[in-house]
Every structure is written in structure tokens, then in C-alpha cells.
Length: 234
Image 1 (cartoon, rainbow, N blue to C red):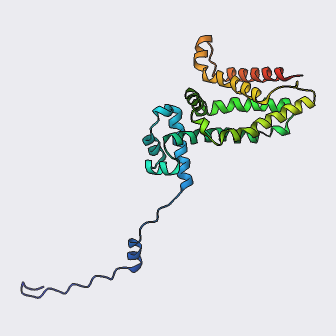
Image 2 (image 1 turned 120 degrees about the vertical axis):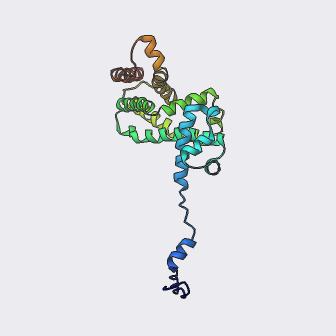
Image 3 (image 1 turned 90 degrees about the vertical axis):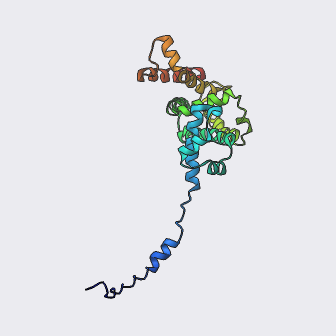
């Protein structure tokens, strides 16, 4: 432009918008839905929360935040706080029972099968302190919510039968005495591990031993196996 009176140069027209880009921008982003993943995250967060704080002290807000969701989605997937707590209990029992089924006790000689069950129970309690914590909490509540479960008893029946079959084979082979109740046997096996581990800190102080040291744990396992097998021998 040579002077203030010259006409301004024409402005070139704006390029036509790219139709594909416009359509893409106008289309809402697709929300990825993963109900199974969401429920799994909720259950993991809830297990940690209930094991640490108990039923009364647990907070749904913390569970939802830890699971990367919100309370509305938590209630949708699992239910209210008591229903979530019961689901955690049922999942905890289902996990240990499912893992026990992988022991293949039916393929072992009866004494070896019992020894494997003792070793598994011992190590499972060590590896899953949250399971022991949940048992403590529910017993404090006298199993009020566990009584309402429609799953727990049915998932334990095959487990009891598995132990009964081992005992029966042991009797038939002349290795075990007759008349041992499978439920009583398992309660004894679980109790031997449970009492030790749930009281290990106070017991360590009382007896002046580090009962969580590896040699102490190995000694304990060996003692439990011998104790149980001795009680079963014909």
C-alpha cells in the first residue's frame, strides 16, 4: 500500500475446514468401559481398607479413591458398605479354597498330602496377613455378616471332602488311625499356624526369641508337621 488512501489488499479466503477433522471433533470421545477391572480394583482397595481399619473404621471414600472410581460406581458394582465387606470376606475365602484345590492332594501318599496341606496353610497365612486380619475382625463381630452369606458353606464342602478322602486312604493303607474328623483336623492345622502368627510379636518378647526369623519359621513348620502326623498314625 503506497498511501493511506490506497484500498487495502484483499484478504485471501480462509481455507475450508477439513471435514474429517470437524467430524472427529464433533464426535464425543468414546468412554472405555471395564466393569470387571473396576470391580477388581474396588475389591483390592476394599480388602486393604477393611483389613487395616475394620468394618467400623473403613471409609468408602478412601476405597473409591484408591480404586480410581467414585462412590456411585462402587455402590453400583458391589453395593453398600456392609455388602462390600461381605463380598471381601467371600472373595478371601474363595481365594484360599481355590488355591488349595491346586495342591493335588489326591496324587500324594496320605502322610505327604497332610504335610503339604500344613505347609500350604502356614505359608498362605504368612503371605496373606490381610486374610488373618479379616478373620480377626469378623470374629470380633461374631460372624454376623458371614452368617448371611449364601456362598461360604458351599465353597467349603469340597475342601472338607478332599481332606476326608486323604484320611480314608490313610486308614485303608494302615497308615492312619480311624475316626479322625476332617473338620476337626483342619481346625487343628489352621489353629497351629494361626495362633503362632497372630501372636508372634508378643510371643517373641515373652520367650526372648525372634519367632519370625527364618530358622524359627522352619522349626515351627517342622514341629507342626510332626505333631499332626504323630496324632494321625495308626
